[in-house]
Length: 196
Image (cartoon, rainbow, N blue to C red; front, side, top):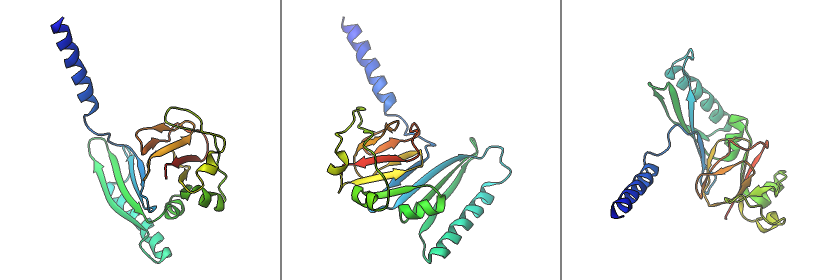
């Protein structure tokens, strides 16, 4: 009986340790801090493409320079461009001063602000949301969250929020309290309601 207990405990330890291994790699993500600054990490597969990392870097940097010149300030920064020779994937890290800069540069909706500010900006929010246990909120959730933050996006990637995520559009998956995978969402715009 003791041997069985020891084997069971050992197996449990291995399962727990396996879950604590390497952090996820090659995950495209968008991180928003409490001030609305954005860090975008993009992994793209350039296997078989007809241009080098250097050519990609030059082209991307030229677009960023043109945008910054138009805005009369450094609104976007290319932090790094690295290529993994084994996988041919390129990792690009970029920072944006605001969701509006992200939206203009990438041509994809990205809003971060309070529910009240979102409505004032013309967004029609929905109460068709779920929490981490897939439970729907009260019908008057948007009234309760008027002064709390919301992320609205059409970018179906992994998002890292500045505050705890309370509710999200159906199809989104909670990775942790502040991180969500939006790849399963079918709506054009995805909403993420935050705790503050």
